[in-house]
Amino acid sequence: MNLRGYPNSIVVGGQESLAPAVLANATPQEQKQMLGERLFPLIQQMQPELARKITGMLLEIVNTELLHMLESRESLKAK
Image (tube, rainbow, N blue to C red):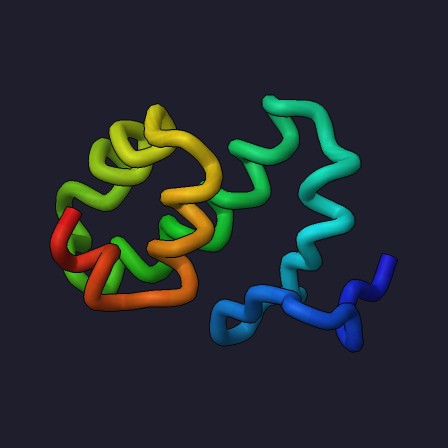
């Protein structure tokens, strides 16, 4: 399914966009999977050795905050 073109989509370099409607229609487990797949490469750039652990820890945070971290690199770095 091509998600490009959805308004308010979140795009992480080299990945399909993440549309809020798609995220809203997913199960909680699928939502965490989608968010984790987008967070991991960003975290891996900053902390390659700890990327898995950090991503797992961040996925315990509520999804709205995770979405904010995807949109704001400064927020991600702060966490």
